Image (cartoon, rainbow, N blue to C red):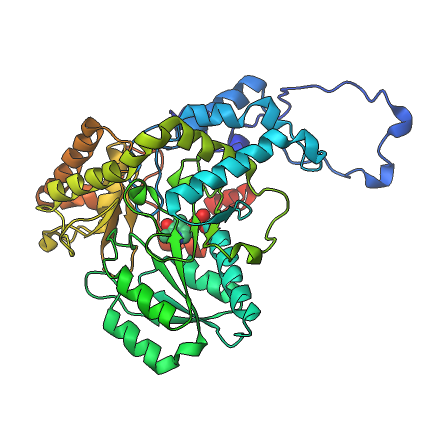
Length: 471
Ligand SMILES: *Cc1c(COP(=O)(O)O)cnc(C)c1O
């Protein structure tokens, strides 16, 4: 896009007196807006003709990056391809025109979809019942913890208020426990990111068995590693009278491989928008259904009206059905294969702090050659020049230069090989021309931004921007 020609802001394209539209004179005299409610001065709106407006916004939209534009290896967020048939199903007028207050006997089809989706989720996870009400992963965590709290209360165990959360957990885990009014106690991970069983045993002895409500685990964990100690952890936690919570935000590596219910978990959530595909860049929409072991379904709280985010449920069900019972078993193995392939191809150039088999994602700790001063941030910015979305950077916090890559099961070998080649090229540039990488991106409409300034003094209004420019 040519920014000079089209301008950065619609306000900058404004020409005094230029019209795109003219409205008919008010033909409804007696319904006219009362004088005292009318504005005294004209609103300060941009004055543009229709074609200018269309070109401006069309060109802006072309600057957006999504999974439909290119490879989007954002670790922990699972930006997988969203098949278009999902959108077609969710857009069917029979679904789209439903009203939440319609009589129940006119929405039997929609209810059947919810029931069938819950049944599929039960089958995929080995749990007994699901609720579709939660609107996101974090909302699912809160819902699941409310179930756990109610369960303990029903047994007269109100004093069980401690939720054990590994130090490598997603930030939403402790946050959800706190919102639920529970107390958080952290358990350390080992150097390889898996839970330190000795630290867990020590913790259990220290706090006493009857104060623990639950243990939250993410599996594969934040480093993309399968928690091999689950059987032992499960025994310890259940012996303490507490419940096991499974953060299944990213369940794709498990599909067809293993089921949380079989591993001894009592409660879990799944991010439908990550695991079963729904476009969720920019923060939404989502759905975080919660599944429970038999006997716990009576404690499902009402966390939202009606059936939650129904359109996301339709997409997930379409995804499950279009893969089918046999093909869905390939999701986990392919996600795992793709991640391991990239890891092995790049570990000569990028620092791999924890070697070994990963699941759907893995973490590098910056470039292998530390003499170049080129950081993970620089690599991420340089990737934009080559038309890739950056991986997740500086998360998890276990390493200084985290670069977290998740290719997902969808990508072809050609796409993945293209990415590997570019990552190697950047590692080479870091040695031969570090300034080129450190000053990237060079090909994007906006170059390197000052993160600190943008965070501390965000300029989000036009007037402010104009003042700043003239100041
Ligand atoms: C994304 C994610 C969450 C939070 O899900 P939201 O839908 O963003 O609320 C929780 N846990 C893990 C492991 C995640 O990756």
